[in-house]
Length: 100
Image (cartoon, rainbow, N blue to C red):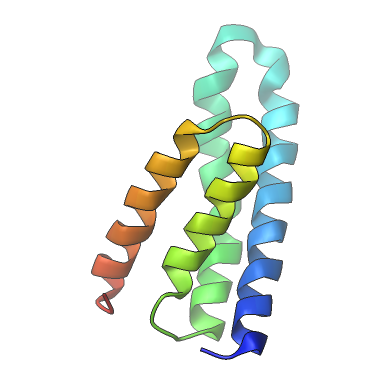
């Protein structure tokens, strides 16, 4: 994997994170239901940047790096359980893609 690939993964991860945060802020006004609504809508919004990244960068650990960068961003914001969730998601994504 070249530096260009890692930079592209990072750019797509930042785009996905910003889109996910925008959706979470928009659904935050719904009260207690917002946690469930935000996670569902965020997944729908984060999926297209991930698919574009996966199509563009066809290297071995690209999905794992994507999810680990998301986990680091979430952890820096104080939501450390995302480390475990995204670690599992990255491993499962690499297994499904068939490159792990």
